[in-house]
Length: 370
Image (cartoon, rainbow, N blue to C red):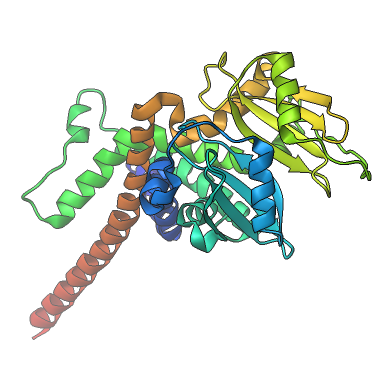
């Protein structure tokens, strides 16, 4: 690489990094914490850990939650893979604000309820996802993702020491001053984790705009159904679950979603044990008045592009690689915190050294003139 080209890329890398340092710090720290979100929530909220026993009917849990929170509309229920975890009921207040309720699926007791303020991990997720700024936040996070890809790719290009000196490129020098240590650590860690950061920025940006991008891709959209309101009573959720299991097998239930003004469309999400993707689900949609299956969304029957998109979240969170994968994503998040801090450090250090050289030069000129 020509010295002039390298110098230009280095300046771009520096200024883009400085412009997005605060965002990278927020995204890196929040992303790192979210890797072990369930474990953190269990520590913050010990009541979420329940004693397994005989599960109550899902409809009983629904009735308990609706009675306890009449001011909110039920949107979905999430059942953890861990049988010792409470079920999470996600609701929406009349003003559109979220309301979340944790329920012991064995006793039916409500162990915790409240808005995002009562659920720090949920607040953290929305900070990471949208910066708590809705659509505007999504755009900013997307731009930050593109900037991260640029920084990682061109950072590796700038760093590249050549094949013969490749090993030295990962060396962190100590004992030669803090600036030297920070600079070599910035380069070495960036080269080591760069490909993971590219993956993180790419998958994150694609996840935010997944629905919009699918309109231009050869994918089968997740089905949506509408059922007219009726005076007829809604069937118990357990009736729908039993029908789905009778048709498709005794799969573990992971989520139940309700749509329509009265929750008359119910989507049942069962764990797809035949899929290699850890969070893969088979989804069956029901008319809750009649108990009729309206449609389905099964990974095995979908085209390859659907499979690719469905893997995005699993890759982004590191779950695709199991515990080791999560540790890698944790390291990537923490590295962003380091890069944001060390990049600003090096910039201030360079400015300080530049001022010192200028002052020294001016002093020399004065002495020569005298």
